[in-house]
Length: 228
Image 1 (cartoon, rainbow, N blue to C red):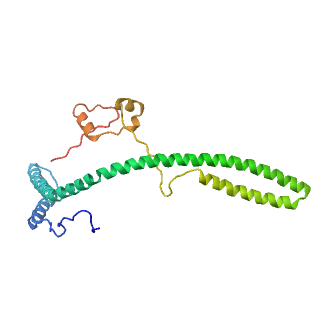
Image 2 (spheres, rainbow, N blue to C red):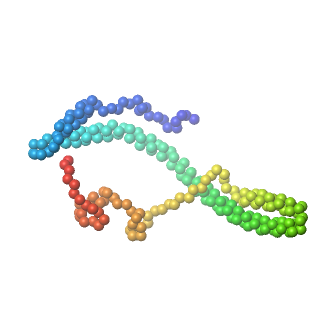
Image 3 (tube, rainbow, N blue to C red):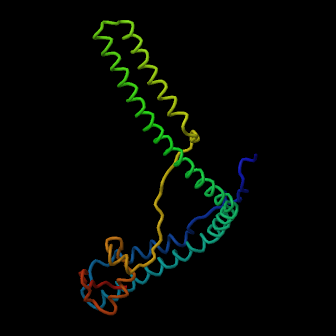
């Protein structure tokens, strides 16, 4: 078998870096912003606005460059993911099918084992009680031989009970069973009515609603002023 089941793209030696011009633009924009210590009049406000525009412009440019630089890698990544997912579709489907069947079998065998254990323990208790009665009779009559024989019989009962329990199921060793709860929402309105705690607020929906009205119970709404 080869070292990798998927061919490796030759992209590891690709040099990706931020060009020197970008660092120069950043230094100039930051220097222009740092010189502004207060906004007290129209002139200072104009300077602050210009500095902020330069910063925002550089941020936008580097963000766009970042997207362009990542695009080829993302295309390769999506292609590799697609290859893997397509290859594994049938494997996952069959694995899931076998897992469900084996899980059902293991669960049934576990129940059989538990039932066999209950029945065997009941028989064990009954046999032990009978042997204890024999021991009591032996002690009353001073029959040491009968007492010794009864002790051996008690140990034999324990061994036989364990063997009986082990023989009453065919569960596969090393295969674990895990139960998981699956669900689908059949009526969202009914679910919200009965269990509102299962619904989380959506920031996007709230912001859209606030454009229509700011009087929404359960929300503390305020205005915050900033320039952009």
